[in-house]
Image 1 (tube, rainbow, N blue to C red):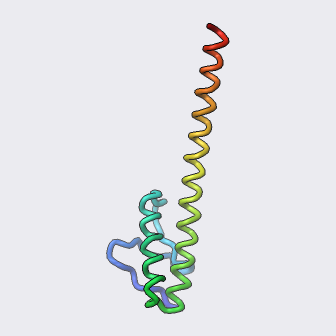
Image 2 (cartoon, rainbow, N blue to C red; image 1 turned 135 degrees about the vertical axis):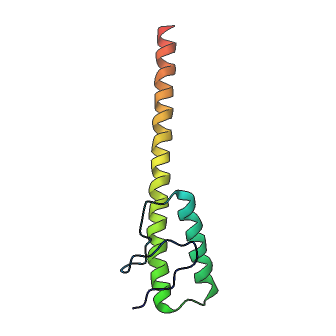
Image 3 (cartoon, rainbow, N blue to C red; image 1 turned 45 degrees about the horizontal axis):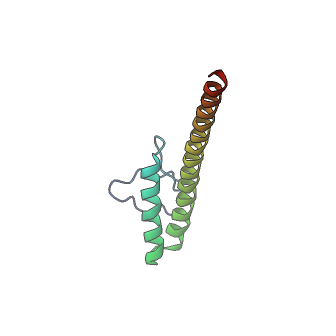
Length: 94
């Protein structure tokens, strides 16, 4: 299996799965890369090997994005609960 060429500005790929190597990506960078992958797959120009690598990379990035969104959702929920507790404590004390 051959590794697809690395585009300019693209992080180096892990030889096994095509996933970027290096520090964790931000949500914005990962989402932008998913859009690039979708455009490449939609073009119909990717070879079978490249398609497999892109799908694998896309899955990893989507999981990263979902995890980050879930973490933000959890933090917002905790913040709402903290605000509710504070409000209830103020109302009970006053």
